[in-house]
Length: 170
Image (cartoon, rainbow, N blue to C red):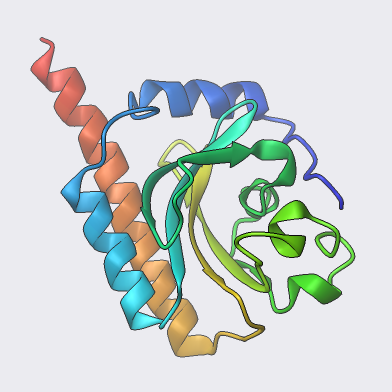
């Protein structure tokens, strides 16, 4: 297993994440709807909005996974936040970065992963909208475009949520 490197801008990225005031908040319908739609649209058993803090990935919204968080060290999303484009793993069991990952060898038995990085307007990438399957697969151009649109909706909700909270405190 190859843990994702820590981004050079991790201090700024973590500050932007904290400023969202979203970590460890209760589920919200606006985020739950997006992951539910993504899971159904792509026929995926797992869909997540994953936010990467210093030590963990925490799930703001999830379908098909009981866990609320996992270690950043074993996260696929930790790799995805290093990208500006979609991060896709066609078969994790054959990928040397992930083949011996506990999330591949055990529950939830990840084979396919695709993560759309959640980049805020200031440039900080705070997490992903990701989809996971227990069998290998591949996305086509239309699938990628739809996932990109859903990612943009998540970012808009994250930014809007922060503006609502800041505006409400004045």
